[in-house]
Amino acid sequence: MGRNKKWVQMAIFAVVLIIGVFTIITNLSASDSKKYPQVGDKATEFSLIGLDGKTHELSDYKGKPLLINFWGTFCPPCKEEMPALQRQYDKWSQQGVVFLEVNVDKNKVTVQSFMDQYKLNMPVLLDAKEQVRKMYGVMDYPTTFFIGADGKVEVKKIGQMSELFIDETLTKLVAKTKS
Image 1 (spheres, rainbow, N blue to C red):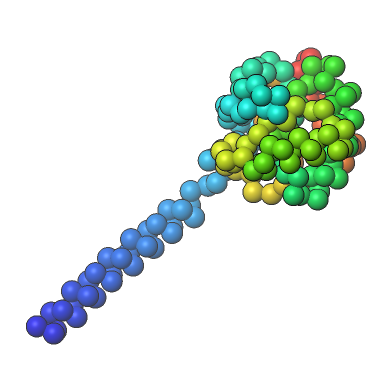
Image 2: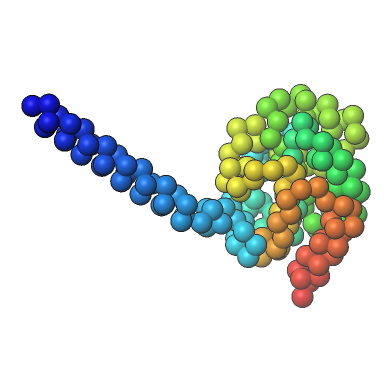
């Protein structure tokens, strides 16, 4: 009886081990780039409430170039790039470029206070449950997606951007839209 019990335990262990190895291999071989929008892919549709209280859907901006910036008030590089983003927003929004600042903070009041303190007036969408962040595979802040008028991701920038980078990228995006 003891010998059969040991054999059954070994068989169960072997099955669990095989399932575990299979799961690990499957997850490692599944490319993350297929799960999230990458350069050349169509941007994933989403819907979020803005600080303005309105619902914003990505499809609302169809046919327009977009800058979608994922950020948080807790993120020092995000804070540092905000003045440059605001200046570029002031420049490019009048030329039809849409800026969507997707904030992942949990508290709307904190976000509004931050915007007021730094005198920022860009459209902010609230992603407190981080649903859109997860849909886009954002792991680091800030992360910015530049979306062409055709709805495809043209540039994905992880990390803080210089004002020159933002301006040059938007110049190319708008030129491509006009051609």
